[in-house]
Length: 86
Figure 1 (cartoon, rainbow, N blue to C red):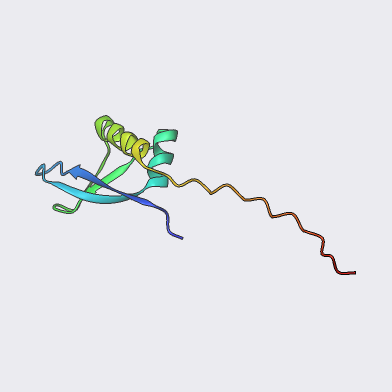
Figure 2 (cartoon, one colour):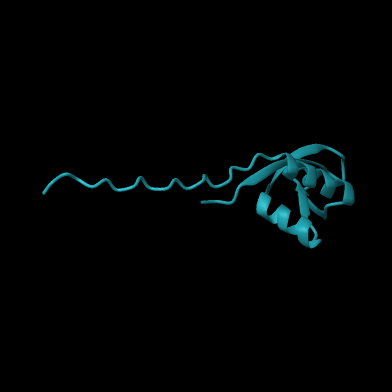
């Protein structure tokens, strides 16, 4: 099963044109927790850059707002009923 990804809006540093880019939510969460850099890209100029403090905060807010489906609680199996066969 592929990692869930987030579509985020980024502004190209060259022309300021906004576009959507997809990033793995696990990669974003890990980078935010560990302080590692997050690489963003814009398709208009095929340019990559490291997310700024403001962009990182927007990513943090987007992750916070995501609805994550937690594992469903496991149902306990029905107790076995003794049959009346003798």
